[in-house]
Amino acid sequence: MKALPAEVDFVVIGAGVAGLRAAIELADAGRVLVISKQEPPEFKTKDRRSEAAWLSETDDVILHLQDTIAAGDGLSKPEAVKIMVEEGVERIDELLTWGRHAGTKLSFEPENAHTRSRVLHAASEPSGKEILRILWDKVHSLKQVSVAQFTFATSLLTDAGRVTGVSLIDEKAVPHDISCSAVLLATGGCGQIYRNTSNPESATADGIALAVRAGAEVSDMEFVQFHPTALHMKKVPQILLPEGLRADGAYLRNFELDRFMGKYHPLGERAPRDLVSRAIVHEMEVSRAKDPFVYLDLTHLNTTKVQKSFPFIYETCMAYNVDITEDVIPVRPAAYANAGGVRTDLDGKTNVNRLYAAGEVAATGVHGANQLPSNSILESLVFGARAGRAMRNVEKISHQPGEPKATYSNGPVDVGVEELIGRIQDTMWKEVGVVRMRPGMQNAVKALEEMAPKLSQPRTRRAHEAANLHLTALLIARSALAREESRGAHYRIDYSDHEDRRFSRHSLIRGDKVLYPIT
Ligand SMILES: Cc1cc2nc3c(=O)[nH]c(=O)nc-3n(C[C@H](O)[C@H](O)[C@H](O)COP(=O)(O)OP(=O)(O)OC[C@H]3O[C@@H](n4cnc5c(N)ncnc54)[C@H](O)[C@@H]3O)c2cc1C
Image 1: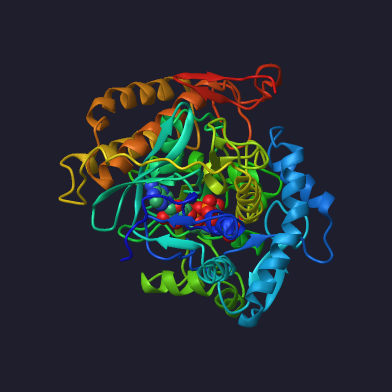
Image 2: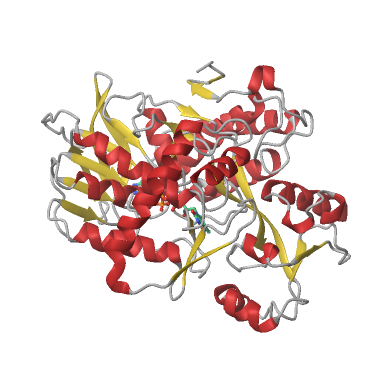
């Protein structure tokens, strides 16, 4: 392991699509340190149909813009979406140029909620993995950029309202403070707040919590998207069974093996994903089963086509003795993505001086109240690059880093931390999940507030993650309680319609308060 520097020009927290793309942009503007709490990048799913949407040759920028805005249910910012779809073409072209030697065969295929075939698939590799590999190789060719893996950011250093550096725990559990002129948060998602999630174990909401503690505003936290169909089997990872399966004709069946989607939406299984999630939750509730789920049924589809189109799903399920071409597959919804996050302008700038955010941690306004499937990688690429470009113009200031304040340890695991994380996950799943109601959300806020003292002084990396999950869960619960309407991914039984007069606005959290400023 190379020693960590005491000072660099820019720190990028996160080595996913957003962080790596930003680092490339920053490389000729100064010394860049990218930190990642995990190993080298691995796209979150090994599924061949991991995908990034962008415009195909036959596509139309206006149509992609319209699809994205329709999914956002009144809250997508048209200027942000326009930037994403227009600059997305350039970002993808440049990516293909960087990766050309790999000889990847690409094709555009349809996906639910997109009106055109604009979702990219790589023939030989998952396209998401391919994108990360290309960015990773590019970053490693740049002299000014170094990457520290297994290095965990615990807090942002601030002075007189501006960010001056980052506190870290390195891979040997040694604390460091690194000073810099600007920081980019590119820490990804927060799905681990929920008991059922397709997100990796690392998605513990660190970036949102770091930002909030440094005084940053967060926005639209109530809009958590649930993927309708994650594999549900004991001791088996909650693999996402892609929307493409339903687009290709898969059926959903309840406990009695009856098809049910026709009761909920004229498009049946091809209905928008949040509607499908709600229908599944309803079917699970009426089944009164102790461990409820529904079935995804592919048995009527062409076996060879299923095996060829979804090899990862086929092979993984086979490993657990489920032949998806012959057996129905037990599934239930899982937390998947957040439309909200750290509020930024169109250049990734937050309200805290010298703090930027991009990718899943940021709320640029692209997703509004709900995400169009497969826009996330495109957003990370486009706004990662824009944030990197904006940070280049930050005036360089040298700070003397102080002595790191605390000593940390990677183990043994703090007593009670896992139990607290489990309680946060269960509370959020039960009370602030796919279907929400005031009393449940009030219970959740109360239960989370009562847990706070137990998480106030984290000393290990895992305890920091627990504290970050806890803070972000509270932000989500408070925001969901305050939005007295249903919109996009936020669905309340007690307010099942839009309430445009009060809520056709972005939510904003300041301290304990959820506000709806007119922007
Ligand atoms: C199962 C699954 C399938 C998906 N499929 C698609 C798809 O098909 N198409 C699509 O467009 N999107 C998809 N997405 C969403 C997409 O993967 C993400 O939105 C996108 O990759 C976000 O990239 P990012 O750079 O913001 O974050 P990530 O790729 O999540 O990277 C986050 C980085 O931050 C680091 N980090 C986090 N906290 C800390 C900390 N405290 N200290 C140091 N480092 C830290 C992590 O180690 C990691 O390097 C999928 C997501 C999931 C979960």
